[in-house]
Figure 1 (cartoon, rainbow over the protein chains, first blue to last red):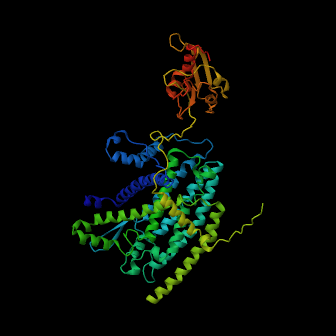
Figure 2: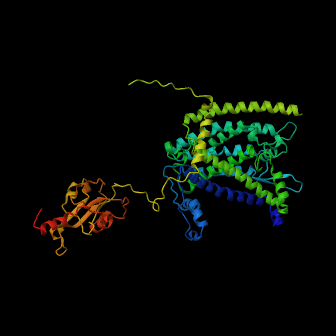
Figure 3: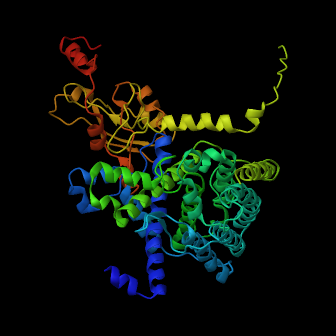
Length: 391
Length: 179
């Protein structure tokens, strides 16, 4: 099995791995939409979707009822509905761009996954090997570069629809994305200033950031959330804006723009926008977890290596240090953090009312950007002092 | 009317960052997350109907199972949307109630017209028509939404009657006292 895998052409290997990740992300994005509905229902003290059930599944004694109440079958029903629904194509749209926009929304959402590590295992030498599709040094830079391409799909969708509301939605979305991207990028610079000490090979790799958060000792094991709380805060706020989530959902704002840039879309094309939005959220949460929440380290000051060592010590079983188990464990820990962040996204959505457009612009340019710059200057000076005294 | 001038306090720094307010809001929503649902799952769970509820108008029988309506048509005349249509008829011979003289041979209430005002119940001299608990009417055709006499009695059932007016009249007539 292993031999067969390693004998495959690298391109085929890459394709298969990419396909596997997409096959996880796509249903996960769908599951997030269900979680969104359920969590919003619980916060508003409603039961939420709980009716749909596959006929024969109703006979499974306890599980069937439980899954029905959880609304799991609504997810399947919704997905099937989007696939088989009639695709309406308004007569007044620019057909090429109209069809292109949803595809363009999906591409950056999935492309960014390639450089995001989602787990690690230890090789024979005891070094952590990150699990990711492309272990490249540009890392986070690639995430930022590719994910900002997502704004084109919003603009295209808004413009190709040839209708007022999508147009306004597209304009708002692009203005918002551009203004918050600055703070987003500036807020993570201190992290990379810290891990790129003078004299070491420079890197923007996200796996390297996690490696720094799993070092032994008090300062080594500290998650960057505690080391740079302001950076984490700015990054999180900008992330809400980048993913068009409430309280920054200017792009959609169903109250004043019908549905925003995707007003004229329906059926599968609309669901592509939807999945792209959730994939962006997943990737954004993943990047946040890697940068500030220690990636796949289970607890602050408790790196994965120590955790696995404890497990091995307690159980004495050999499989606890098998790379496959460690890899799956690290993926589970990382995924747990990502899903926790997704919950925070939904939690905030049902707590904070939407900002007005001018408030969003004011917050982005007059508050968050100066704050990010001040934060950068402070940490640049602090890191320079610390590293000078250390050397 | 004294004019009260309110001093609008300038926001503190903490308030201007929104953060404490958002955190307290997050606490509130998180607490709500664990409360049981307030809503009823309608077709299975039905709301409790308070007394005095004005639902679908129905015809009722007296405790002896006799129909109370004497087809005086007052409800038909008073009905603002003209939802009620009564065809008066005679009480059949041999029923023991010939002294009542009249009974509806047909009694239709068009529920697509009814506005649930309750004037028919208010005007009825025989206490024969009542707006009762039923609040949900549905049908596939306009014809289905018209309640005919048998359906009205089925919905109405029997209500307690303190007067037994027509029994008393009959007893009085048998004792030579017409009124």
